[in-house]
Image 1 (cartoon, rainbow, N blue to C red):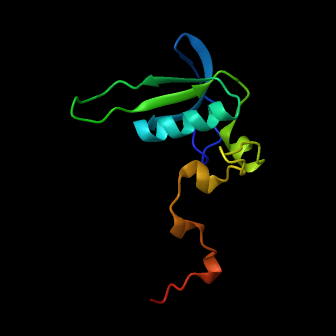
Image 2: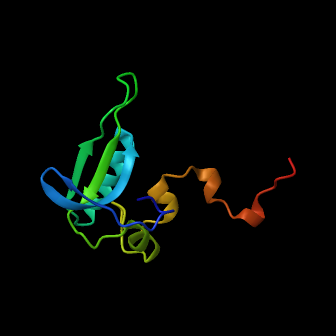
Length: 111
């Protein structure tokens, strides 16, 4: 589940029933979300997704053992913290670049 979806999907990962946080993640994103959630006290489980073609990169499914966890609620109710104590915003969760963090009314689109 991404921040754009409110679906509640449960799946057994590593033999434990988990709430799926996100699917189809590359390894870098999986590590980022895993470390962030573990820092906030959640037990995280991951599994590699089956490949349709061997030339495709590895994709991962990430879940937490807390069945009532919902990333949309956790981010927008400001329940998660970064490693330096800041509140996790949607931009941090999505790892948005600096340009997307600007105030829309201050960006000069006429250039």
